[in-house]
Length: 336
Image 1 (cartoon, one colour):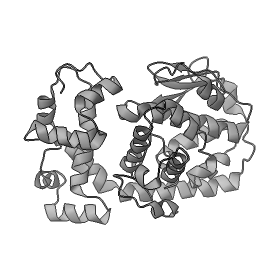
Image 2: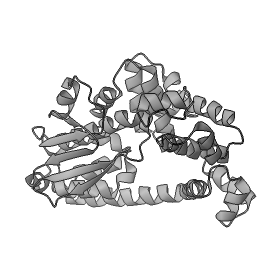
Image 3: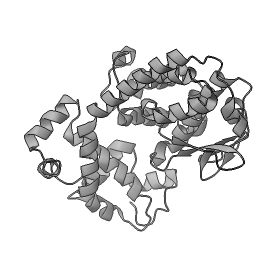
C-alpha cells in the first residue's frame, strides 16, 4: 500500500483529491493508511493513469522522475532494510533483483557486467504505453535515489538512457538523476564496475540474514496468495479473453463453482480479470497499424465493435484512434 499512498500524496500536492486519484481502483481513501493492506499491479496502474490524465499540461516523464525521488529504502518495507544491510553494492543489487517482486517497479531491471561498464537494463516492453513515460522515469529515479542514499550521496551514473520522449527541458531529469540523460528506445543505467565493490555503510550480517528470511517468507506467501489469479490471467491470455468462465475453469482442472470460490477468497472478481486482460491486449493490438477496430474487437471476444469502443472509452477516457495518436503506438490507419 505504501506506493499507492505515496502516489496519492503526490497527486494531492498537485491539487488532485484522494478520491479522484483512486477512481476505479476499489480502494477507499482510509485504506491508504492501512499498513497491512496491499494493492494489485492493476490498482496501482489505475492510480497512475488517474494522476497522469488529470494533469495533461504536465510532462508524464517529469511527473514520474519527481515522484521517483520520494521512494526511499523505508518505502519498500523489509526489502529496503535487507538491501541496506548488504555488505557491498553488488550484494545489494543481487539481493534487490532476487526479491524484485516485493517492490513497486514495473520496469524490471537486469544487471549486466560483461562490458567495459556495468549496466542495469530495465525491461519496459510490458509496461502499458499510456503510462510508460511516467513509470520508466519513476522507476529509474527510484533506483538512482536508493543507490545514492545507501551507497554514497556523491555517486552518479556514468550515463543514463530512458525510453521516454525527449522533453526538451532536461533540467528536472538532471536535478533528480545527477546526469543529463539520453532519450531513446531503451532504458539503462551505466556505471563503473568499481561501484559494485563499494562497501555499504550500514552493512550488518545478522540483520541481513533476518531480513532476507523475512523477504523469502513474504514472497512465498505472496506467490501462494496470487496463484489462482495468475493462472486465470494466463489461461485468458492463451485462450482469449472472450472465453467463458466454464472453459477457463476446465482449463485449470476445476469446476466453475470452485474457481469462483477460490477467486473470491483472493478478493478478485472473474469479470474484472477478463476486463484487465482485454485492456492489456487491446493496447498491444492497437500498436499493429494493420488491424482495424472491428478486427481488434473480434480478437478480444466482443460480439459488436460498439461494445469494445464503449469499454475502451471507460478504460482510457478516449476512443482507440485518439489513444493511438497520443501514445504514438502506431499510425491511425484503420482505427476509429
